[in-house]
Amino acid sequence: MKRFADQVVIVTGAASGIGEATARLFAAEGAKVAAVDINEDGLRRLANDFDASHNGEIVPFVCDLIRSADVEKMVGEIAVRWGRIDVLFNNAGIEETDSITNTTEEMWDRQITVNLKSVFLCSKYVIPHMQKTNGGKIINAGSIEGIVAEPNGAAYVASKGAIVLLTKEMALSYAKDNIRVNCVCPGWIDTGMAKRSIDKKGGIEVMLPEIQRLQPLGRLGQPEEVGRSVLFLASDDSSFITGISLMVDGGYTAQ
Image (cartoon, rainbow, N blue to C red; front, side, top):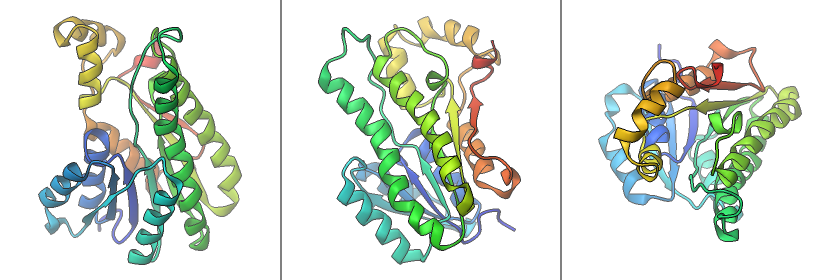
């Protein structure tokens, strides 16, 4: 029996990285996955590559997640298509880091808006559908940098720290509706976003020893490892868990 057979799952930022890996894992477990991103080509590739023999499905939805009308329309289309929404993984995000004094107002607004407003809007429009069906699960993508800081990451750290606290607020506000809300906080993961950050810091040859020092397991994590943590938080295996931030960081925050 597939764990998510016939459940309707929304994954944002699904065209690459952790979002793509998680969408594939949900669909392999029988879910009907609404893969949401602004990257239409990436979504098309994801949908075309998926092996439908798993009995799940992946349907692409192109959406600008910082536009309220677009998000409301997208959520409505998903609800009409499948009749319900069981899981929301708020994963969309960008990383554009610098110190406060070197961060432009445009950089700040872009980082906060994409990373934080997208969580707000998707949750705002999905929660009423979950309330109609007596519950659901929301998992927000935080970061180790929502728990600990590092230099020259002002806007990113601010956005991820806000997501950690917003997760707790949502968990408290909607527990009465049987909606569980949790946060997953990845460390250094082998994604395109991480590669761009590594390149800015001197490349993998420079950064790998530092990553191995920071993450006691001694390597980059894989997107699927974060994805499996998301599936845990969305499953009945975590039925008495809400309001937490789950570290998926190779031991980074244990030190």
